[in-house]
Length: 134
Ligand code: THU
Image (cartoon, rainbow, N blue to C red; front, top):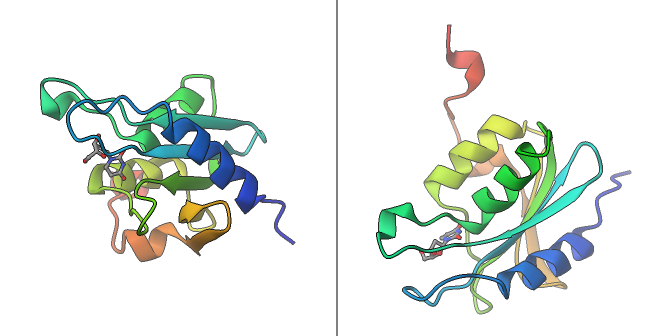
C-alpha cells in the first residue's frame, strides 16, 4: 500500500499557490514535493521583469528540498488553474527526471478532491537522464 497522502499534498500545493509572485502572468501555481526522507517542501512560481528569469512552482519546491540535502522525490502535487489541470512545463519535467524515478507519483489537480495521478514516464517518454551520460 502506498503511504502517500494525495489529498494532503494537494492541500499544501494549494496553500503555496497563494504565495505565487505573479505580477506579469497573474497565473498562480503551487507545488508540494514529498521526498524519501518523508519531508514535504512547498513552492510557488516566482516571476521576474526579465521573463526568462521566472522560476516555476515545481522547481521552487524541488530546489528547496535539494538544497536541504534531499535527493529523491517520492511524489509531487501541482495546482495551477482551478478550472483545468495544469501540466508541468518541459523544464520542470526534465528536473523531475533528475530527482525522481519511474515510481515517482505525480499528482495534478484543481482542488484537494479533484486531481489525476500520473507518472513521469507518461509525461516525459524517452527522457534524457544521468544514466545516459557515459
Ligand atoms: N508555471 C509554473 O509555475 N508551473 C508550470 O508547470 C507551468 C507554468 C508558471 C510560470 C509562470 O510564472 C506562469 O506559470 C505562466 O507561465
